[in-house]
Image (cartoon, rainbow, N blue to C red; front, side, top):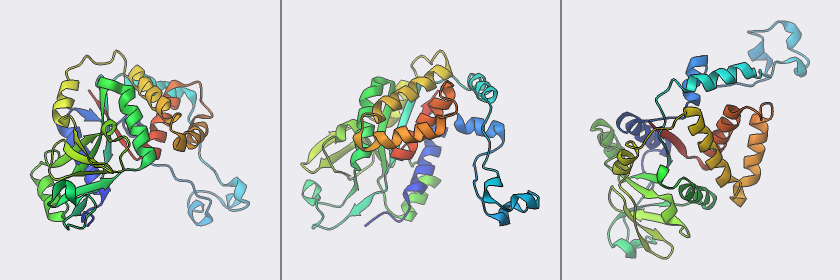
Length: 286
């Protein structure tokens, strides 16, 4: 039985808890969006929309409908300058959120590993390949984990949010420990579970303790250099994942084609492409 709540609901509340308790923030693209005063882009050629803003000459032909604007290089350079006013970055945390299935019947495929009710989620091959390679790439300078709640009802979800226990009631598994598996199962919060098809006991690090350890390391000398290194790590991983490399390059070509010589544009394009292709959130520790 799938959890009563959606993955996105869990994602939002877990991220909020991590941002508040663990000195984490989202990549500064969102901070810069606030500086600019916008948080979304809209493209439409429908005349009913544009008639509210433009005179009749734009109604036809379609080619005359504005298609947006390209930000000038000077503004991107200003972004690089503003990033240094944010707290000094220390490490990266990659969180892949999962919605659990609650398995309560003895006919469940992995029942023999537990002989009592348990939770499970399935792995997506290209997503797992990217996350595992990423964990190996960043080594001890960050975390790459799957996160899944050890509850499945809306009542339990709300109790965890209300009591500020959503981190404590989640199970976290390092991506690099799930190679050659298709399913991960667990019974309780923490860092222990069993991976399948061939059952393998998995013990990951305690995420809260690991984040605390990382918070003690020396910060990066430059936030921009930290972001560029993040983008380089992402790039080195995605070009090696066969199922993703082609579309990754297409996304980068589309997003950064005007400004391939500007570091921040290329870096943000890589971060966006990674989040889009793997549905994984990137948080930065400071």
